[in-house]
Image (cartoon, rainbow, N blue to C red; front, side, top):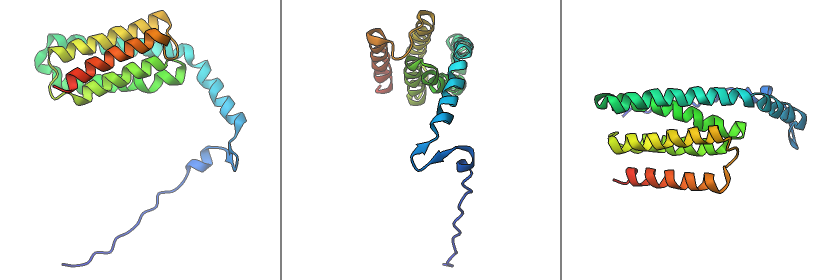
Length: 161
């Protein structure tokens, strides 16, 4: 067997050029400016998330009406749910992040998306609409915790079959 030399490749570290920081941490003024930008986008988030919920609804409707296409639709459903999961907390809607997380967990875990899985997706959609329509910011308090517990139980039941 011939010995092959290995080559270590160290990627360039360009992040430090993009972020101002010192020995005490990130520049507080820059962090405040970034937080203001995010706060300014909060109204846009509500528009974006409604569009994402509409995309999920269209995919859900297709999955319900076209059982033979369900497996192909899982990837698209996951992508939209993942976007919702990633954005919610950044804009003050942590409950949307939690719901998106559980929907992603469901979509990643099921081998085959059967009618019970489709029903579970519908529950997640209903929960997302409720959060946005009721303006349930943050974790949603007791109602939000109960909602997440219920969705977690549904996902747990379906993924352990």
